[in-house]
View (cartoon, rainbow, N blue to C red):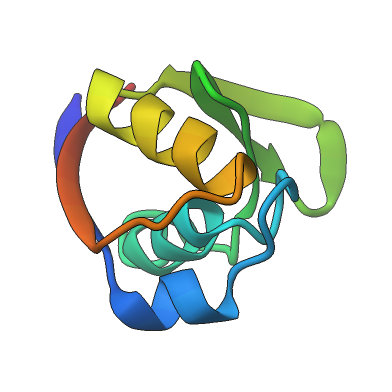
Amino acid sequence: MKTLTVNVTQAHITAGWPGSSRRCPIALALIEALAFHYPFQPVVEVGVFGFSIFNPGDETDSTTVFLPYIAAWFIEQIDSGLPVTPITFEITLP
């Protein structure tokens, strides 16, 4: 297992789409962070409780990882149209 630090920056917040599971700020930050740990560019789908990493060649092949509370809170805030600031959190990859 690997611990991965995810930095959601102001650039991710600005570029992200609230309500989008693949283009929200956390998804953008996860894609950036995961690029160093996976030999392919992962397709990431994010939900309030966790995210799934899909193999782009076979989206039926996926890994699900739970998000920490701060990330779930961030998603709820941004999807509700409330202001957010950059955050950092850690996840454990299988």
